[in-house]
Image (cartoon, rainbow, N blue to C red; front, side, top):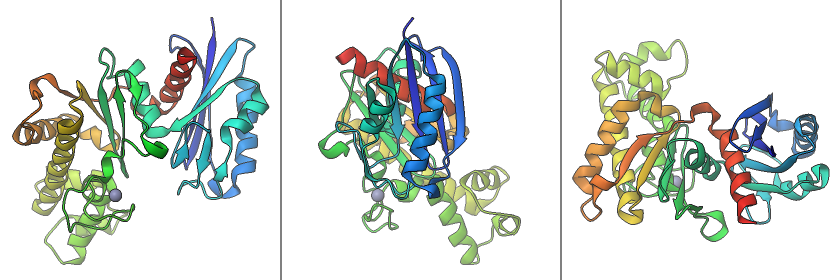
Length: 314
Ligand SMILES: [Zn+2]
């Protein structure tokens, strides 16, 4: 049977895997990115590990990597978490080292494809995938194909404005969904509440370490009022954002993934309620809002799904 390679490049770790066409994982290797050493050294370690996994019947390699990038040319364009990767021709470099076709897309798009092929997206042709963790990213599949838009800029679901004069976002805009409902945003609001002298258990907890979104949720579940407000506001904003996307795309399914989904059912309940309240023109009983299925493995399965899609399209 034909085999495929998958490569998931993150700011802290890199994973490579070898799969059978049916999605069975045969072998994998994970190593730290050590981003500060720069492109050339990281590329060398990637090639070394891939060569170890590559068999004679390996057909292609799929890669998911943080953007911005040019998926057609296979070039990475200065991502914030990979310093020194400025206009690096990753696809070309790996094709000449490995002698197989190589395909690249941003990791939100590959995660979306991964769910579509192997996870919560099976059985539909139109879906939106949203990942809520330190940031909020996403991918859109229309008629079975990823929507790339101009210069690979489509699907940035985290950067829709929710509050006109809201907190400043990393992208430069104000009041983006990401600046209101990401794990980072939740933690930031909690820290601000502590600084303002609000009455919250988080003040005590913050002495023992960093405040995270997970800690805010734990405080809320223990009855902390400030944490409850911060947590519930974030879910409400997420619901508004998901509703906006549904109104525009009218997908068959919306898949929610990322770290915040550890709170699973509670997130789903709020998002579904807000969508029911706000989305008026799309038949929402036909839009399923579900949790992602691939969890931590989404990076590798996404890269595999990219390689499969691209080889089928050839
Ligand atoms: Zn933004």
